[in-house]
Image (cartoon, rainbow, N blue to C red; front, top):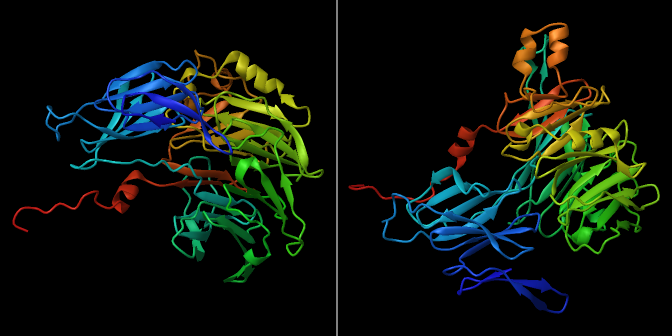
Length: 482
């Protein structure tokens, strides 16, 4: 995709030996100064002077035109230059301009959602972090935090007593920082993984994958490098350990996945899982089954491939949906794959039967509640209640939700956020009001939610004020007489 001086946007096909021109999209007035693809590949946002346009890739026509406010900091005679754009997975557009503003737009209604005046100079570029920065070991009660240049391993604290739902319990044992693992060199950490047993840590930068073994003896923790045994020649796009901590799955280029046997690290034999399609896109989501039989992998072509780990071959491909998955997980009790997409749709796919489940078909026929579909942020993580086979736990930035597949689905007349109402009801009235979705908005912004085997729910949040306090000043200004 190339934006030109004459206002046209040209599409090129990337071939192994050359770039081949494909076609032109609608020409706009003025130079194209910034471009952004949506992950679905169906839309392109372009920025120029005073305007943002949304182009439909299939038809080539402009479908939306958003006019950018020049701002108080800029003379209204000067044009506002849209220097950078990001097209988020939830279809919001983020713009950075010469008036020093970062703005969030609803592309469908062409309305401004938020404005952040960050500087009196030009904002030239934007970047979106799409990585999950927290890993949880449910068996060992450990959390692994990913920072740009280091990892931190923490042991969770524990309460001294029990209580009724809603109680705040005193902590008898505080969380403990066990180790800090620094990345050598200036390359940032790309992704990381913590094994379920807590004895293996893996991470990748843009150059290579590193592997470490952690040993716990009483109150001491020691770490040993095992990277020299890895036969991985490329950096990883995503990392995941198997449920029994005996294998490491490394997502490589072109949707290939390398399976590393941690029991036989010295072995020269490794296996590469390959998709049935010829996709060149990398895998960005991985999910392994609890019994060690299945691995699901989602790439940026909207494909989800399921692999048989006993036979080390492709088992099936989930029917392609035209929106990218944002979270996937395999139910440990049923081996059904749960997939949540950028448009907030939820699917359940039976791996053994290679088709959608009856619950999933019912959900699609009835449709999700409008308030669920109108949420601002995508679901980033899915997990399950280890004691109740029918409960699915998922979360986005501002809420976590427990879906009980045995309860009725909420219809348009139902109150989706009905937890406060249910507390005041009893008996038949409560049963009549109850539905499958239980939503909690107590914690935000959410980075991770996980239900441990002892029934404790771990919630990792990062308050916005703390984030703001860590940010440096965008521009150092010299004040008068200083």
